[in-house]
Image (tube, rainbow, N blue to C red; front, side, top):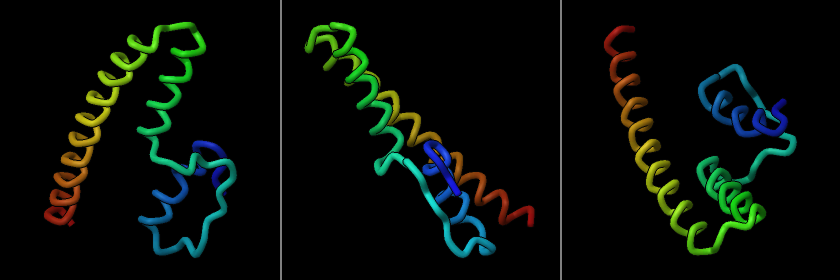
Amino acid sequence: MGHSEGGVIAPMVAAHSEDVAFIIMLAGTGMRGDAVLLQQCELIHRASGMSEEMIAATCGINAKIEHCLVRIFIKILIIFAAWKRLVV
């Protein structure tokens, strides 16, 4: 069972295990984590009184950084999978 962040992690863990027949998720995000972070960033800045121009600039920079990090993470996963096939 996954609740909140566990509702995000549970499907990822289950996808890598043949022992899991089903999962129960409570209060998962329903959207990708990077989208959640960007939305939270925007809402927090708006609530704190930041100008719309600064919100757009800040969230734009954050989106570019997150995009780069996701691409790096995917490359790391590919390298790890290739290494795992060689070792096993």
